Amino acid sequence: MRILVTNDDGIDAPGIKVLERIARGLSKDVWVVAPETQQSASSHSLTLHRPLRSRRISKRRHAVNGTPTDCVFLAFNKIMADGPPDMVLSGVNDGPNVGEDVTYSGTIAAAMEATLFGAPAVAFSQAYGDGRKHHWATAEQWAGRLLPMLIERGWPKRVLINVNFPDLPAADVRGIRVVRQGLHALDDTLEERIDPRGRPYYWIGAQLPAAGSGQRGTDMDALDEGYVSVTPLHMDLTHRRTLTWLREVIE
Image 1 (tube, rainbow, N blue to C red):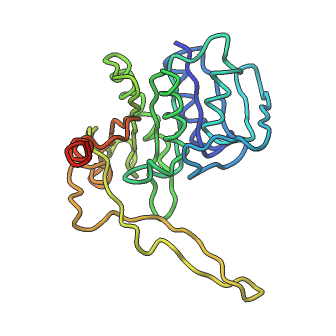
Image 2: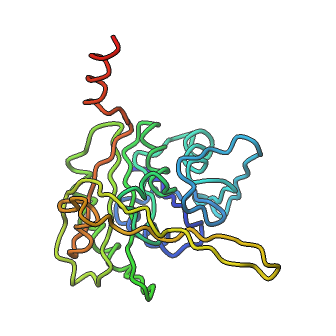
C-alpha cells in the first residue's frame, strides 16, 4: 500500500514524525508531503495567486510552501503522479480537532482533499492540557490499533475519518468510541491587547464546549471521558431535511 502522510503543523512538527512511524508500520512505501511552515486553521484553502514550490528533502519527503490542501494536490498531480497514494494520513495534529474545529482545520482539509481524489483518508489529532504536555505515545499506540480495523473494513467514498486522542497516557485511555461531531461555544474567544504604540491588536483564543448543548455522544464528550473519538465526516454538505422543506415551499 502506498501511503501519503501530511499535516498542517509543518514538515518538522513532532506529530508528523509520529504519523510517519505509524504509516511505516503498515507499509514500506510511505511518502511525506507537508507544509514548510505552520498552517493551522488554514481550512480547505488552495493557493491560486502565487507560485508553489516543492523542496525535495529526500526521495520520498517533500516540503511545500503552501497549505495542507496544496500539499495533497501537488502529491497527487505531480510528486506522486507515477503512482497516486492508496491512502492519506493527516496529522498527528498538535491539539484536538473536534466540533467546529473541523471547518477551520488544515489537518481535516488535507483529508478532505484526498477524498476528492478518491483516496481513503484519516485525520489524527492529539489533545493536550494547559501544561502542554503531549502524550504522543498515546496517538502512536492507539492509531496502531485503530488503523488496521479501518483498513480491513473500509468506508464509503467521499467520507473521511476524524480521529482524536485524549490527553492521557496510552495505558489510561478507556477505549474507542464512534461518535458524532460536537458543538463549541463561540463566546470569549477574542482577546484585545495594546501594542507599545498604543494601538489595539487581537488574539483569537481556544473555543470551549457549549454548555447545555447536548454534548453526550459527541467527539468532545468522548475525549473528556478518556476515550479515542472516531467520527466519519462527509463532503456532501447538503442538509437533507431543509432541502425537502425548500422544495415544498419553492417548487
